[in-house]
Length: 291
Image (tube, rainbow, N blue to C red; front, side):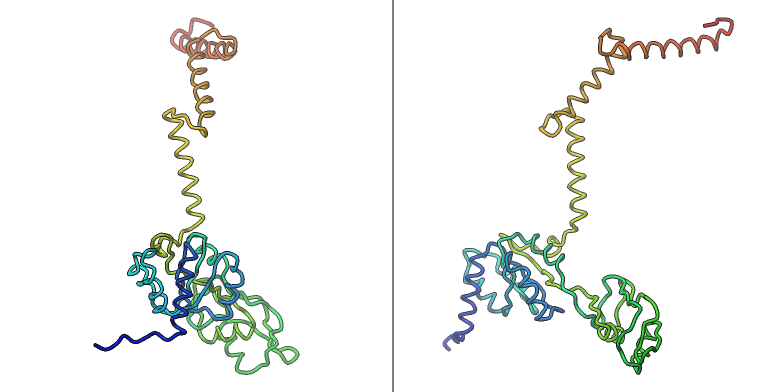
């Protein structure tokens, strides 16, 4: 039987380092590196250094490291499903939802590439582009950006939207935006999954924070309304229940004509109103009677 091929020393060291990271941190996430440049990744690493560690490693080495930690990770097969393509591995003591929101809120500006989708209306401002007249004019024309030649340079005649939100950016427009120094695309680490005692797929991590906040607020309002409706006392509803009970008791007392000092004014007002209504009804049936 042929002997098992020994792993190179440098790879063994990498696996050992990964094991230490998996043991050190309670949470980790796998992020897709597609579309993210090395310089942009460095910006993110520096920005988040107090909250997380971001490492690049081969999927095979990560899988090997996890398999050596069977006491900590019993769902290696579920994790392995995400170990495809170029990935970054994020280690943190924050929960995966925090990581997702951090990356969503802190994207890096990037030049547009052919095929990119405009995240917002891409505005090109009027003024001197610093570009020399030549073939570049045809690209301005194709993008429907009005120009004029002044002082030997191409000037944009007025502010114009070069690409509307949701529109695909073609090669010519991407090149033109780059020459104008515009970076309209926001890129960042795109989490594929998070791990916190179990695999949390992006479908669950990718919550809409505003919608979630609205749902929580609505749930809180509904809970308070239900508690008050069934007269269930809680620290949040006790005052409301007392106010409601007082109002209902007062209403019953007024309708019953109870001679209580606090409500005599309302009792008399109600009696007067009923008396006038009765007089009006009698007058309609018996006009000869005058009240």
